[in-house]
Amino acid sequence: MSKFACISVNNEGQKVQNTQEAVSILEVSSALRNRGLTPVSIKEIKPGSSGGQALGEVFSFLKGGRIKEQQVADFFRQLATMLHAGVSLSDSLESLSSQAENPHFSRLLTQVREYIAWGKKLSEAFSEYPRVFPLFVIEMIAVGEETGSLDQVTADVAAFLEGQIELKKKVKEATRYPMFVTGFFLVAVGVMVFYLIPQFKAIFDSYGAELPPLTLFVLNGSDFLIGNLPYEIAVVVGLGLFALVYLRTAKGKGLLDRMKLKLPLVAKLTSYLLLARICRTLGLLLQSGVLLMVALDHTAAVAGNVVVESAIRDIRKRIVEGSTLAQEMSKHSFFPPMVVGMARTGEQTGTLSEILPKVADFYDRELNYQLKALISILEPCLIIGLGVMVAFFVLSMYYPIFTLGDAIS
Image (cartoon, one colour):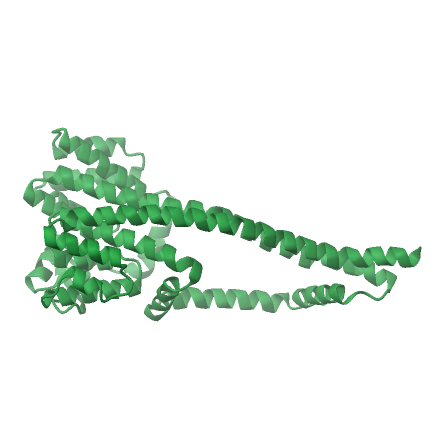
């Protein structure tokens, strides 16, 4: 038997943490539910895992053992297609394990097939690999096995993962060019401050002429930065380490998540991203037959924002007390009137599981539009900023040279 660290939620929405011994994650999940708890996170505790496991994960990553989210999404898409075509689960896993390009993933699928041959269910086999298959995916697979709709559930999981991957790609692509220009800007400033300006200073010193205030300001600023470089590096490294440590704490994460929802340029993008994720996850779980209370717990766990997670847990708590999803959403400013209205319509017509994915699609499109609009504004601003910096440098450094030439003539 193995020991597991469990995070669950009781009927009042309070978080409960404990450890439990069991054979598998599903056994732990079942035991927690029998006690009236909804599991949110279940992780196996391995003996002496603190340093050794972390080091092992580093070596595994360096060896290419890391399984990417895209590979998992492709696996579920292919598995759904094969199951829908009538291929048995065992044959499907055998075929997919032989096709997997990642040897680590191939071995994992081979082991999953062996578990099934020993009499385990697919959900039980997946529960052995919580780092690859999230708990809410495992529970969806379990529901699909019970209802005989495994092909549809695996297709839903594939669609969900593909949507999340596409969303991440859009955000990365949208931020790539601004980050490149910003990096180039910082490199250019560094070259000017630590290389070009000192050379001009030597030229000016050789003439011994009086320099304009603007040039003196630039030269003195460069001298200050060069003279205090060790302290500046220490401050930057110190602040960076402090930020990394602080943002890993609950208080730091909460502060950062609140800032994301309030900063002018970031707030709308963050809200659209979170709304798309929440609606898609909740809709997917409901479509798969997961109960609303359980679906809300899993949605809160994958929300990715402490503020929104707290709001969802509060909504769940109020629903247990007799309220409705739409009523409780309307009490939280994060959820726009459109989302509240669509949720109300879904509850009244019994089509909540169908409406929520459509709401997610809407916010996906809005996010894409907002990203393009933001980039169209940022690109000229960054280029203008770079041009102003170059013009300022040329004016401050070359103007004295021209005046010195006039004085000599």
